[in-house]
Length: 75
Image (cartoon, rainbow, N blue to C red):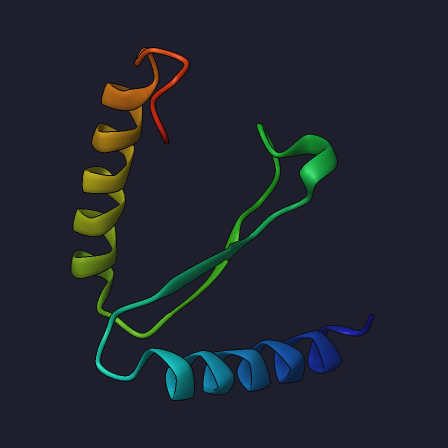
């Protein structure tokens, strides 16, 4: 897919997400699953960078805290 087409698809996706989430913030991350440890990451978001980073830090902290929970716990 050409970069222009890719960007247009992402713009359409962002508009669809905005229609669905209303006032909530969102972020969508795109990366190559086959090499995600070193792959570039693209993202769509409707919040400022500072807010996105704060939300990501909170998400990572929560996920890391739940990582070692008992197997019967919902994650």
